[in-house]
Length: 87
Length: 431
Image (cartoon, rainbow over all chains, first blue to last red; front, side, top):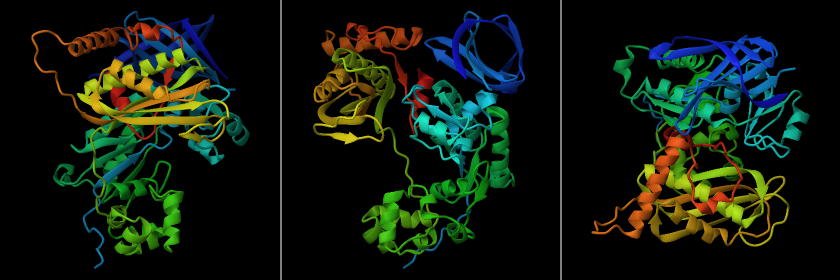
């Protein structure tokens, strides 16, 4: 089952040097609706532009739930925009 | 006299990311991996599959299939809405990998890349192309995503390389060279050859050609005069023997297509939507210093009525209408395109509920700049206003600043994922 959201969330993430001068950002822990979800499988990162605004989009799963998170590079806010329940 | 097989070594590599969008979705959402997945442009009751994962295809789910039917065929089927930013990112990463191997490397379509290694032997330092193919597969997994699989085909021309890439799907690699060319044809059906669909197959059958091996052995005169009735037959004769026949052309059309968030029959709202589409087309024309003489509208409607000329029935619900016209002068601004689009729109059937629109400009030619004038002409002023609007929209997002004519429209338009072109992605990168 798939749900769309637009919720500000707390995220614990690591920022580490990646290949060819890039920075590899990995969200490890997500707090949403009073629950904590730890990353079990990283899916994919991709950037997205909305006007001049640049968003960093992350897809990952935690157990049988998958999430889409957006990091706003201007405000540094994390937003949860999609949830997918695997069962 | 019969032309011999091209004896040059196979040095064209075709890399094929099959089910590209579905695979990108499975990469992004680990819970979709191993499951039958389809991608649609709009997730609703009418959703149509624009691509399906390997798992879904194994159940018989294909392009154009409706959600309801796909669910019946494939237990656990999941339909995902297309995400152009994601596919654009995959496309860019793939292109980056390909371009690191040769100066002649490019994306041929959204899910296919070509690397031309001709003349590159010294730079390869003795490595075989199969070795490089394996490295590319590994790099795609590590740089694009661990679930991403590509098929690699190596041959003497681009068409044969595509044949080779399709030979061992998924995640395969195959080389076609002068020595195994005929053997390879012997293991394929006609319809497995790229560009041979039902119509071409029928033409070949009518000439007594039922297999790729027979196709290969057919005399040039038969293909040219009897089967394809023209130069196309000569091209087939060459490409089947490993000679290059594909020529790269520049931009021939600029267009945009959209599915409507809320279907509508309101002519004012449709006019506003057309203006929005014209803005997008105009921006791309401007980026390439092009102007267009021709314009085509293509609409799809819900319902089953099919009246008037230029109507054609579509598969399933709804129907399509199109109209095109070539004008004497070339234009490039949104307001100019809009005027022409409205001309065509006036010919469309009224009272029908619109589901999607496509606008395509063609007959492209380079923009001729205005002659120098002491006072700014109306044309130059309109041009300047559009440039300024583009600057504002570049900064704050597409369609932030719009003419009043569009203000009525609250209808959100979602970009459709196109087939067979990478221009959309290149365009989006510049946005």
